[in-house]
Image (cartoon, rainbow, N blue to C red; front, top):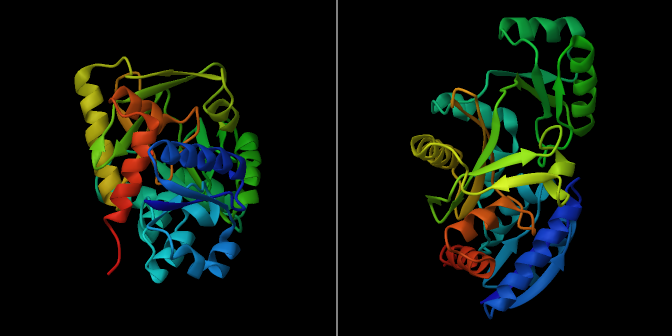
Length: 309
């Protein structure tokens, strides 16, 4: 296949996108695919859409921003260019944590209690919102539309809450506030409409933030996770439900908290999870017997099967 690999962009996750994009391109070449690397932002994609029509598939290696929130996907859909990963609507829903939570509640996917806060709200309004939702400390504050734990804070007091909101509002006008779930960080990758082995993530200190995700030695990964088989099966089942509720395709990753009582809480669906040397989808695929070059090649094959007449 002739494949264009898009990466870079303008989001806060641009460096990770570069690493993913180059790894994807290398993996595809090892499978004999003809690959052109395209470190473009969204403006370049729009300007060069005719150029992109030469490819059998465009492999999207973006993370965050317009590359993951459905904008690039919508452009490619209108141009009828096959591309990897979820379509524009699913990408938008997965990226927007508030909309994701609404869908989780609608489809009875277990998730932590939550509310959303607008940057225009007064402190009094914010406190009233939290009280109405019976949300008590500790809490987690997140920007509504960021990935890789960018702008995330765990807060234990009013002062920390408002500091966390101030950080979150640097990335947009809406923030998600949810109950902090003590316990274990686990994730389920999905490939070709099937769940892969559960991975447990153990940060060496603090929580699984951007630094712990992308710095070697900052976190330990246990694959498959050392949890009872019935809990692993439940995590995989809930992950598939969330994946389908959002409307994903090809591959994705669903993140969870697992309480000390083994209660499952779905955090989010990542429609364009990382593909770097430390990334979790390739790790889970390897445990399932799928090496990285085969993984990315099969993703490209699935996308080419969604071609346009």
